[in-house]
Length: 264
Image (tube, rainbow, N blue to C red; front, side, top):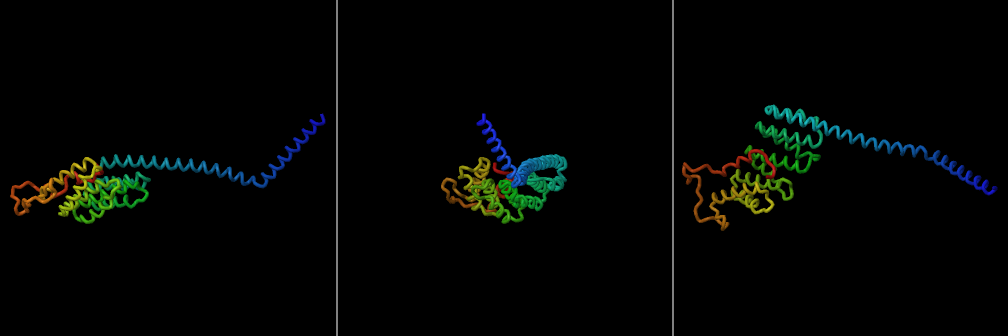
């Protein structure tokens, strides 16, 4: 019996010692533990609050973008103003997409300078997707080429995109060849079309157009497409062309290049 009492006393003493140690530890470090617990709660709550905030902003941007799309479609004459008024309330990708719509509306109204400025804003925005920035550069170059006032500027812009591995590489190569054609550099343009035709990775639509233009250029330059050399027959000059000759199909780019398009 005495042994049992002794064990109970020993256990009680041990429990009291442990409780005393806990009180001492709590007195020394309790405030830090409380702070840590509060910090964890704030961190979790802050993260959830931020996520809810971002989702709310995205939903608001999505709704504003959809509303602007409908308004611009119903009032094409004032579409540029619609998108300008909407831009301030948009975030992230919706802002870049709105700038694309604004640029397209300005181009449709014949305001090339405003459209190019909108494309330049997208290209300069490091927060935008890289593919979208390259697409904006491509569209800007195409618009300037269509305007025909500064083909060297158009070529410089397109050359930035016409780099192997870039998302719009083949479209940029096609547009470069067309710009060379507009500048009268037919041999350089022919090299560009040859490159597109010979590249197995060229998209079918671009290869088809390049094949047609390549054949037309070879005929115009008097090149034997099989031998790859100039034919013996002389090339007609404008003075030799009969008055009733059909219009030169290579004098201007194909009609389908008048509006910016992506890889086809």
